[in-house]
Length: 490
Image (cartoon, rainbow, N blue to C red; front, side):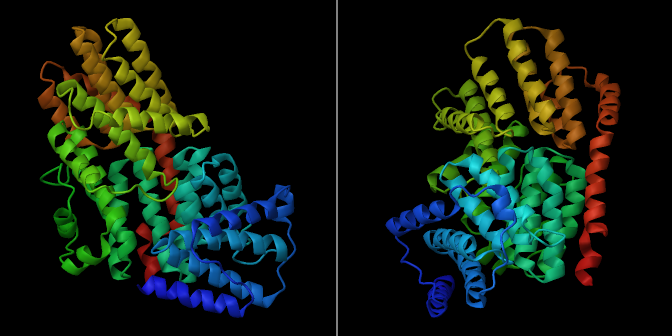
């Protein structure tokens, strides 16, 4: 109700400034979309980046109000949020550049992505960053670009440094909400990219204390599930499968029940259930994984807005669990999820989404193993998936692919290749930091000589030192302080 009232007041102010907004109907949105597309038609990148400055003070003020209106709309009236993005882009093309222009370009890209026009959406995301005339792009721009747009044509991990810049910019400018959401998006992208869980857990422990101190419960509700998963898999908790509201409340001493009741709403709870499912799948508890998906689909929880990068992760988890259940329970209630997730990933792959193709190849290899019984052909399919996942830097999915291949070889009674792939999986899980998973593998695959993995772990870690050091360099160069705590205190 508060957000809806804010939208109502925004409309009144905009009308006084000569910018009258239509009512939040689908037809009005479509009319505004046609007008916005007409305004940018035939505009080159140079035309947009070299726009004259906006001199009309009333329009400058209207742009600021539209920006706030879009944020209000995200939480209460998404059609109005869309109308704000479209009107901002029209005013920008007519009156020129102002400080809200980068956000308007990112918002327009977000709208195009939601409409399935990913290539143009990526173009406008890059224009949004390039048109920012400060040293660091505005936090709300990096938040939107990092979460919704840049992953179309760039490896997800390349968004990490800009998101840290957005976080720091938010702290310096006082835009705490967008700044801290940049860091919560950083947590999502980091997990999605399969980077070291150990360093991630350390960083996020610092960050959760900052969020609690600043009462940024929205960002906190998204960061805590990621932190809980990292601590669980890295062997820092007593129950590695427990990703729940209770465990998160106890994680860093947050016993405030009001925080849970008011801050954790459907999107963050959806994220929590998917991390529950993923954790249970990794640790071999398919019953718990299925139960977590039951919560998602029985409650009819909707995916995150538009093209949020977490939606790709959700599709991957759906596919992995559905295929695993099919092997033990052919008629399980989630048997259709593998087909729908692969269809979704296939659509994005056709649109050049570089982060989807390797995951799709993995799911296809596992699906093929149900009907294919020729060992050499199966090995080739899994090898193709492993190669693509390795090239993409997805440590976690590479480990999963090796474990799948090892299981397939066990079914084929090929003990040599089964041991090879399962030890390689344990090596990758160790490199990722998932020591709890490695312990689970040692208990499940008792015939495998896991003591032979020591040399392969050391050589594998050595080969990735350049990448890990570059990530550490990015964090230290961007934050300058351990976890940003000193900057926040200043």
